[in-house]
Amino acid sequence: MTVMVLEVPVKALVYHGPGQKSWDNVPDPSPAQPTDIVVRVDTTTICGTDLHILKGDVPAVVDGRILGHEAVGTVTAVGSAVSSLGEGDRVLVPAITSCGRCSYCKRAMPSHCQATGGIGWIFGHLIDGTQAEYARVPFAETSVHRLPEGVTDEQVLFLADILPTGYEVGVRNGQVKPGDVVVVVGAGPVGLAAIQTASLAGAASIIALEPADTRREHALRFGADVAIDPADVNAEEQVMSLTGDGLGADVAIEAVGTPGTFDICTRVVRPGGVIANVGVHGAPTTLHLEDLWIRNVTITTGLVDGTTVPMLLQLVRSGKIAADLFGTHDFALHDMMAAYDTFAEAGKHNALKVVIRR
Ligand SMILES: NC(=O)c1ccc[n+]([C@@H]2O[C@H](COP(=O)([O-])OP(=O)(O)OC[C@H]3O[C@@H](n4cnc5c(N)ncnc54)[C@H](O)[C@@H]3O)[C@@H](O)[C@H]2O)c1
Ligand SMILES: [Zn+2]
Ligand SMILES: [Zn+2]
Image (cartoon, rainbow, N blue to C red):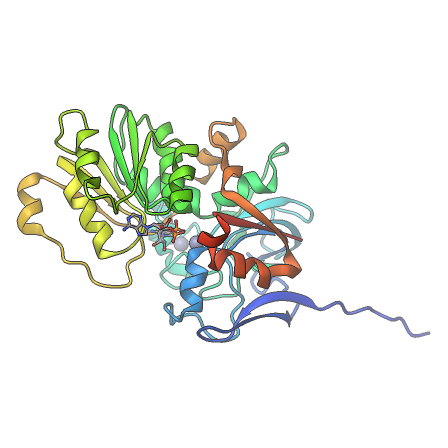
């Protein structure tokens, strides 16, 4: 007797060089290392970084790479060294992988995990990512987060990247304290995550600077007190007038990644204040140390670590962070190409993040 095994191909969004991507048949992944798991991807999304990759801005991403670094999934296979996760477990797969053992992971900086090639962001970058029906997840026990009952995929998906980014690299690096005036330049998903978590850190007022009308509206929905168009002739004067003594904001969070928006931060921050740069810069920025040194300004930079995900998950569970506000458009996994079309023209579609489900 011949047993027929129906081979259903696994589908994934594959990068084929600048400007080229397709929804391809790919090999079904299995654990390659004892510390790996495989997850069935239940919900994933697209990041602005994926659009940068597609423009050819991230040369480490090679032809044939499956993109994506955010997912909620169900464990379907575990490597021989994995004991605390099992088939059927529902997990958040975060953007940053942590071996848990190297010197950087031990000092809570898995963004520079030495076991993953010196950078914790490997999905859809150095290894195949999560915009697929199934994904292999290395160092699973020290990287993924098992999800409690009672939270939806849509509520936790954005803990994979944008929420910890806005919080860790914006609010925490910016040392936002109760009573602070915080300016957030750029109200894309990351800026909105900074706005949302700055409120929780006790900011007395949050001022968003954002040119897109619809995103200024989103900024107010996410907790900004005022949203100003930076193209207004007196935009920066408006910001200064909102800082009580007129001397500037305690914290300025840069969430765009351009020289001009970094410069705005240097002008609206008060003496003794902090500029927290979150934006990914593709071009050099002139740092006016000749002006900044005497104003005691602190500048911080960073790649997200994701070490605050458990804390942020608690805030999502308790309803303090309305993470589902980020998901503006829904797609099925096999409509990935359409999801990219919508996300790539986010302004036209008034999109923040797309929620892509199996
Ligand atoms: N540091 C990290 O670990 C990390 C992680 C993820 C993303 N990022 C970066 O954070 C930045 C924001 O990400 P995003 O997904 O929100 O991007 P996005 O492109 O969706 O949002 C950027 C926003 O900035 C606005 N903007 C453009 N010009 C402006 C100006 N002159 N003044 C004020 N606002 C302006 C745009 O209208 C848009 O709403 C990007 O550079 C991204 O690469 C950094
Ligand atoms: Zn990302
Ligand atoms: Zn490590």
